[in-house]
Picture 1 (cartoon, rainbow, N blue to C red):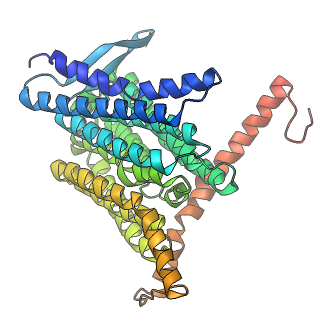
Picture 2 (tube, helix red, strand yellow):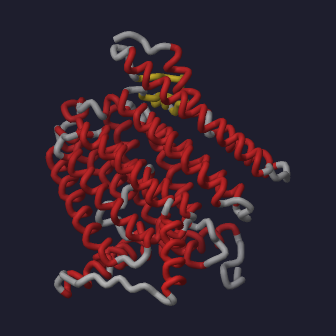
Amino acid sequence: MSSPTSLLQACVLVMCVAPMVPLALLSGAAIFGRRASENAVAATLRASIIAGFVAAAVALADRIAHPSATSLLSYGQWFSYGEDSFTLDFVADAPALGFALLSTGTCGVVAAFSLRYLHRERGFHRYFVQFCLFTLGITLVSLAGSIEVLFAGWELLGLSSVLLVGFFHERPAPVANALRVFTVYRASDAAMLSAAVLLHHWAGSGSLPLLFSGVPTAALGPGRSLAIVLLLMIAVAGKSALLPFSGWLPRAMEGPTPSSAVYYGALSIHAGCFLLLRAEPLLVGVWPARLLAALAGGATALYAALTLRVQTDVKSRLSYAALAQVGIIVVEISLGWTTLAFLHIVAHASVRLLQFLSAPNVMHDQHELEDRAGGRVERRVPLTLPSWLYLFALERGFVDVLLDRMLVRPFFVVTRWLDRLDRRLVGAPDEGGRR
């Protein structure tokens, strides 16, 4: 295989650096006690997203023109510890560049919508700091060539998502729901970190092309390969709201509509699907994980299809409709239909993005219709489900209750205990003011 062209290397670098420019502008202005104007933020954001989108398009065209060139790009060593070294590697093959192109294009649409939607909003600058973190995170997830880069992008996705769920922090509900989302994301991130540690310990490398080539199945043995794949499955299930982690999805609708569109309609909810798509060669050699993925995807699709039929607000219906399609995509990947799954991701992300962004208009039109009709317009749908199944759907499968008892409450108990221990060690007063 020939070496990658300098144009491809430059484009990948531009894609990763572009989101950092508006992030530096907003962060630098805040550090020095100044506030960048909305016009300056808009101009910088547009320039960075256009640069990232053009770079992704040129890189994809270069990859198509030079199919024999290696797809692994290394930008030097990130850091080293003992005998282990962590390199800044990116993968520039067709699926990675295609998903990156989808991501930058989607972020451009959402940014243009957000600039108008959040005009003169008190949290305008805070929103775009978190949005830039998300753009950088999804770019790293798309192009990650090592599990360290993937983990960095995975963390940025989770951090920005939680912050945007709790964007309206003056109200108690968004903050409480953001903590629930944070709890599930911590479990997902812990699984991802465990997979990274085990991969380095057993394979001596964090290379994703090596991991996703299926080579570890033979080199590590079936037991170790199964452990790594199962940890990746937990990470995917937490990020894409697959069962049993689906309970956080309706809670995430507390954020602004543009963030709901880009996170739970278009990109973030598909990040786990994309990771599973890249790991499909590894799934082929580990049939229990492949079966588990098919069962999780099928059960999630059925659960979401039932639940969305009894939702009473637009965003919840759209979120469960998106979850149903995500479950189908996971089933497609488990069956080895990777091309169909990738096209499904692109088409579904595009359609669901527009539906989420138009949700406020739908609500406005409904209110206008009710005003003209002189009262609430009732739309009665005959109930065709058995009563027990209707209750199951109405209570969202009791998934949120189970998640609360099995994960959220133990997480809060441990964190409160650690907080009290930390306060005693440093001699700080506790919540009641006692030392």
